[in-house]
Length: 217
Image: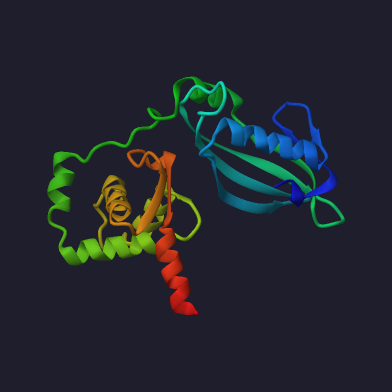
């Protein structure tokens, strides 16, 4: 990560002291990697805003490092990047909700925004879906995933928008259930808790990606 910064570049996170130089920046990154041995950083978006770029990310991991609480953390934030004349990051100002981060360290993110179960009426509705309907839903879900991690909530929302004219009354929780099916079948890989769309991510299974690459060669 530090290699993307100018030799004298700086990284500031919230109101902490700035890390200046690649070695100091690498030490900041290493501190998070040590705190979260299973660390995943998901790139949510990169956009140009005036004279700088904004990099939006989501951190996912278990605080199982030395002195850790053992709780699962799922927090989003962003960085404002100012690019230097060498095309590298000269200055980065990071922002995330430090109070929420601390709360998750102490209590975990598991119980935030739990997905609602299907109602009896919704269960009756989805039982009317045919095998062809389920195949169409699964194929659409897969079309909105890639070899990069994406939030389940984003995949579900994109799929519902694509299929709105075909299945207008099928709830988001059912699409989430189909993602679990795709993970169980080996078509997708997942991180986080799939019972909570906002706190889990999926991508095309590595083996599937390799098979597609081989077919293209």
